[in-house]
Length: 170
Image 1 (cartoon, one colour):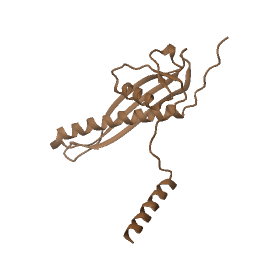
Image 2: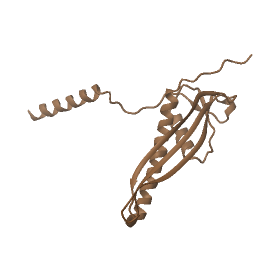
Image 3: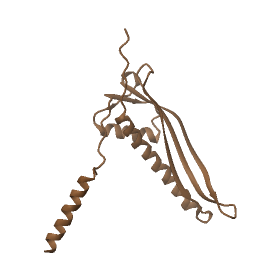
Image 4: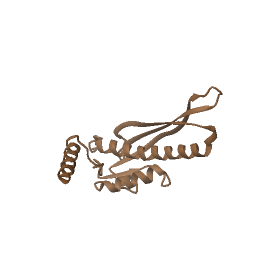
């Protein structure tokens, strides 16, 4: 009897998960045959983005802009720490981390295939002067998490983009 109840609960849970639209994040299908990343090789964003593009399986990472169908050109990238609140004694008690990343997608002649866009990521954290080292480590982890989130958002935007390829010039 207990086995039957457990099996029924498991079946109900699986049916509920299937009905709510839940699905594991898979590889993205990009609308480009080849993509060049106009970023330095030592950039954390570039390394993670190249890894994600290669995992997609449909797009190859080009070595030069001339051999690529599209080029991802990063723009302004800024990281800000903003004080949100101060305690009664004048000490910082909350911080906001803000990461702004602008980018464009161009063809081999520099024409925009997708309008220039930006991604803004925000994380809030509490701050405590008595735990400075722990809070610095937490901030470092939040910045790393924001970088990973940025790569995932870039991949989603690249996959959802509808590029307008200019007609071949006569």
